[in-house]
Structure formats: structure tokens, C-alpha cells
Length: 299
Ligand code: ADP
Image 1 (cartoon, rainbow, N blue to C red):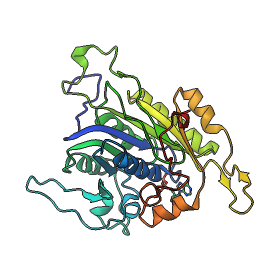
Image 2: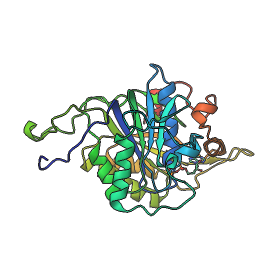
Image 3: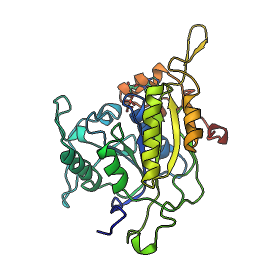
Image 4: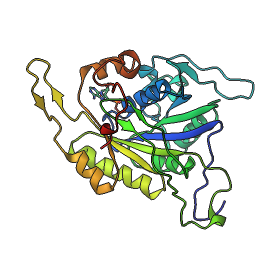
């Protein structure tokens, strides 16, 4: 292994990898990941999309995508991902009994995640969305370091939830300045990180750590999504900022990343997720699903 740079291998058959991360649990990371994957799959260009549930402590994809059956294994001994709503999906929850607690130790976590990344017949995919485990510990760092970084456009424009939108970014080379002889000898593929947070200080502190971790490991941060930013009373229309106000915009400015979306608390988001029918798929006309991508949505 070359010194100074972690070894990063592309995931076979996957053109671009986008990780969806949060410092803190329960902020809507999986909800964002699933709806982003579905929006990409439904966007013009018929993108081929997969979602990998790397949150092996608390896999949510089986419930959110309404699949609980065990996947089959092909002749090459690779697990064949389920295809649900046009998206390939894989989760540890398909392989182990989700109702039984498992004590994951450090090495087991990494080998489990490597199995989900490399032991699955993902290809061909235009995008693999990775729903990361919450936090900024060793596991998250190892994942961030083990998927390759790109030197080109990270993602095409897609709007997915509550005004959240990702757009093409100018070419970005995280390896700039690193001597060629020290760069990994294999092709690079686009990737980046979307960080989800709620407006409370406790979530923002952890989101800051997450953004810093990606920036330090050369992973472009595509943007910050502020979830559960406000609640509009269905009776009187009054808006309340239950978890505080303005924090994500300040954090985005401080970290020099884009605030790419602002999603209110909407019972329909929770109900559709729990029913295994994500809102982008089941209620495309909902006010939470942007009807046409608009640059306005990217602040
Ligand atoms: P995480 O992946 O960060 O742990 P989840 O995506 O599992 O969080 O979301 C936690 C819970 O909050 C889920 O029940 C989900 O349906 C709900 N939820 C997420 N975002 C919203 C929202 N904007 N409005 C209402 N409920 C939401």
C-alpha cells in the first residue's frame, strides 16, 4: 500500500457514489437518502440508481422500501440486490433478523459494510446512494476513506424533498496538489456527501463534525439539508420553529458548503416512510416534492 493515502477502490459497476450522512441519529438521514435515490431514479435520463443501507446498527431501508425478504446469491457468489420502486436496494436488515439485537464490534462492522459494498451485484449503476451510520467515528471514517473520490461533476441536478436540490458542481479535484506517484492507480468516480441535520444545537454540533470529517478526507460535501426546520399548523397555518431557527444556514456559511434544502416537519413524510412508500414515489404531487427543479431551491 502506498503511504500517505488510503487505498480506495471503486465499487464494481458503480459510476458515482453519494453518501448521505448525519452526525446525530434520528434527524432524517435515511428519509433523505431514500427520497434522493427515488428522485434520481425518476429524474430525466432514467438514471440507474441503488441504495445501500450502511446503517447496520439500525437499518431503516427494509421498512422504508417495504422489503424484508432475503436476497438470492448469483453464480459469482454475489448477493443480488432487491429492486424496489425501480431502485436496487441492499441492507444488512435483509440478511439478519432485524428484531434481534446484534453486538457489532469494530472489525465486524467494517467487514459487514465491505460485504454490502463489494459482495453485491450492484452494476451497472449511475448512482449508488449510501445511507451512512450516524456519527463521525472510526466506521464512518473507514467508509469515507474506502470509496473512491472523483475529480469531476459529482451529481446532476435533481430536486427531491421539500425544496432540496442537488446540482452539477464545477469540476473538483480533491487530489489536486497530491503528487501523481502518490495517487491511487485506478480510475476515479464521482462521489460526494450530503449532510442532514435538524436545527437544534446538538444536531448542528455533530453535523459540523461530519462535514469536517468529509472535508478532511477529501470527500466533496455536496451540501447541507436542514430537516424538520419548521411546522405549519394545519388548522391555523401558524409556523413554529420547534427545533430553533437559522442554525443550519449559519453552519453552511461557516463550513463553506451549500444549504441545499430546508424540509419542514410534515406528518405525510413520516407516514409514507413508515408505510414503506416514500413520499417522492407515492405522492409525487405532494407540496414536499418539488414539481420542477428550480435553481432557486439551491441557496
Ligand atoms: P435517521 O436516519 O437520521 O435516523 P430517519 O430518516 O429514520 O432518521 O427519520 C426518523 C423519523 O423521523 C422517521 O420516523 C421519519 O419518518 C421521520 N421524519 C424524518 N423527516 C421528517 C419530516 N420532515 N417530517 C416528519 N417526519 C420526518
